[in-house]
Amino acid sequence: MHDHCIEMTNLATRLRNLEISLDNSFLVQFILNSLSPQYIHFQIHYNALRKSGRDWRANWSKRKVG
Image (tube, rainbow, N blue to C red; front, side, top):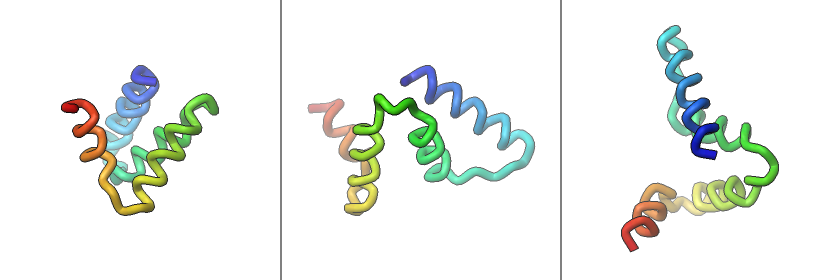
């Protein structure tokens, strides 16, 4: 999954270099939608956090620290 995210980020960088504007939230959703079906639970969890108004980055940092 890490390699896939890096590849997608590199693609976004190439598009930005072509002066195509990409919103970060679009990039995150684009990466999630391009994952293989085995990662559906990850996408569901992210979308649930987003819809609840909770910040997934705060949730992630708490898990890494704790």
